Length: 288
Ligand code: CU
Ligand code: CU
Image (tube, rainbow, N blue to C red):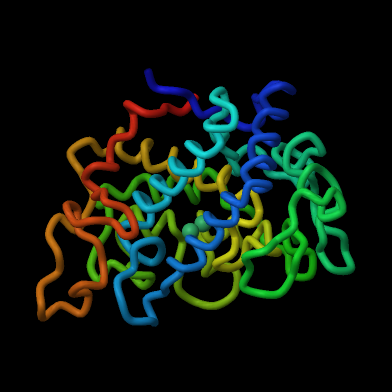
């Protein structure tokens, strides 16, 4: 039977404790850092060559869906009752709301160096030393709302703008497309300043610290954020039932995106699974 992923603001005290403890346990075993490394290794941008599977590409959504499932399985090996909660940032919009509480992810970073000093992932607890990073920082950092140049979380109408688009994605299937649900949700915009960051990307900017780069998995909020992004994909699917993942076929040899993106029935690196097989996860989990 399918299990349930819950809104993080509705978790009971016991559910919060079990989720946090499972995260700390896979971190202690070294498994967590393998997830961080994998995300860093797949952080290929469209300015580089090669196939893009995780970002700036149609498979942004199935790639992160499978990534979350792998993490969830690792947590469930520790505690079978645990599922990944989601953070609905259209509702929980302050620096002290869920999930930024001392019994969940802890709060904002301190002013001097953005080090998170509260909650279970504070450096001083000894249980959350960062070992896989794109910089040499060993402690978790956050700059909620980006104090020096404030940026707001995306709103319900920002999300609605993405959900309304009936087309999953469009050529050239990268960070420059202005049509299609995928990039409207992934959030690569045009222009300069914070207006260029939309939806998913804007949330990474709002959290700041380690959430800004390829090593964003080091902040456990990564999973709660991506669970909500995944939920929004299911909402888009139920609103546009006749529309599916695109491209259906691989771009041809004369196309600039030839071998650069993953078509519906191609393998999604690094797994032996296709976007087609990941479109419907309702047999595995549902969102409450
Ligand atoms: Cu990612
Ligand atoms: Cu992300």
